[in-house]
Image 1: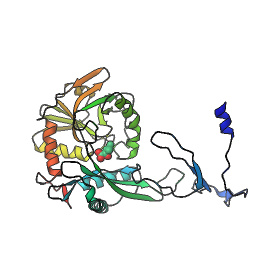
Image 2: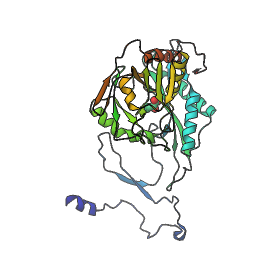
Image 3: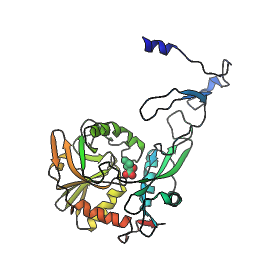
Length: 349
Ligand code: COI
């Protein structure tokens, strides 16, 4: 066939060394990296098509700073008075450390992390939206950047931070979310690294998310992979249920992310008279919850308007005076400097 004959044709590199052997100690080869002369690279654009690739001498590749890795996310807020406010950076630093330990990566100290975020936020201050228009999303990330062929920690790591002004995470804006409960795909497994904020927890959800979005859903809610019965989290955020005065959210047992917004909402809810239960939450409880909402740094606090699981669909009346709205107003008030920060959560630049 045409495809098979195309595979028989080999295009010769324009220049290569005619020596029969490279200078290598052939009797003592282990599984370490001994880079051969050339590497081949071929890039694909957003339409998924790979252009003609090319050979080039083995060497460092140019990588977008916003390519994935083990990463964090935090936001800077511009106040009416023109100051920048950062929120609970110690929590992001601690979570990166936890993830780095799990993935055998070295990690900057809390001081180095916080100082680097402060410098990045200040240097990019002019990119911070005016109050009420959005935030400056700041992404600290850690990646293996040194050469390695076998399976072992990298010989070099790079910590980098970049920033971007952002508005609402969901294209629906502030409209209540329409979630799909996934039975075929799972996000993470017990004993794995689902609690780590690494790209390895985001790449596996893309297929389920794309499928759900193509059917008109906002995002996917995952179930635990052992019992296929308990709520885990949404691709991009944590999940909460409200029933009367009780707020329930899946406990963090290694398979879900310890969201900074999740933790802050739990604390604010308890201080405001709610009973918060962190536990295994069966999917059936969605059916008679008064209210469901999602939390995340990117997402904020987002009310859920409908959830579909198998052939059941439940709709929630999203009222202006909802529990999620009450908690969100307090959290957002603290983050934007409108409510006094009595907890030491805010860093003012
Ligand atoms: C965040 O909430 O900051 C995240 O990193 C989630 C991601 C889906 C954007």
